[in-house]
Image 1 (cartoon, rainbow, N blue to C red):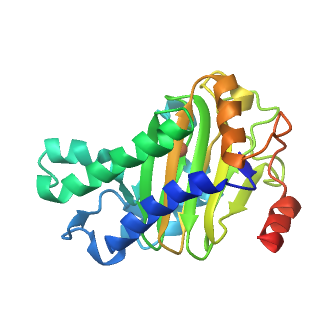
Image 2 (image 1 turned 90 degrees about the vertical axis):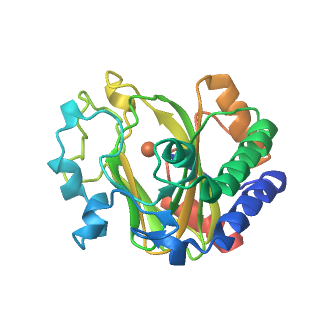
Length: 258
Ligand SMILES: [Fe+2]
């Protein structure tokens, strides 16, 4: 995954309105087993080892060949699932209504503005929130992730699959293929292709963890040309393709100049 170093202002306007909406829900107070916004999963959180979910040790404990693509565990609140929770009787309709309406507003506006409509995930993470290692190889495609972290105290982590000849994560001799991209304060964007199970050198094993409340919006684009257009629209400028992989120095450079 490659960070996009700028997000143009029209897109930031929609992102900020969504962030303000979610922040006004006071999720940190209202998220929990008996709270208005119910937590689900969170196995490693319950075991008091939340960050283990994003560790190499956890990744290597998985049965990679039978992995279905979904994260086996997460600790957070996915606004995209709220409609389903109402149907199954787990969330009252009056709690869900404003969430579903605002989520639709975001998809109509942000989605329309940049020409795609499939939003895979709208996750809010509490402090010590995470999404454990997975591939999404059940829904391969070009991914665009927007992440908001108020302080930047969180991260994304993936395994670079370049040269891999198996669906299993290829960590390299000294874990040099494990790439950790720290969050930055405010919104950031990352993009890249998640491969199918047989596309061994394109499979992206990935995870994320945060010490702060954090949000991620995940969009999937299936057409390569459309994806390139959308990414340039987000950046607000033409880019050089293929995008270069994550480079710590460039990322730092962005930080110094923002
Ligand atoms: Fe994912």
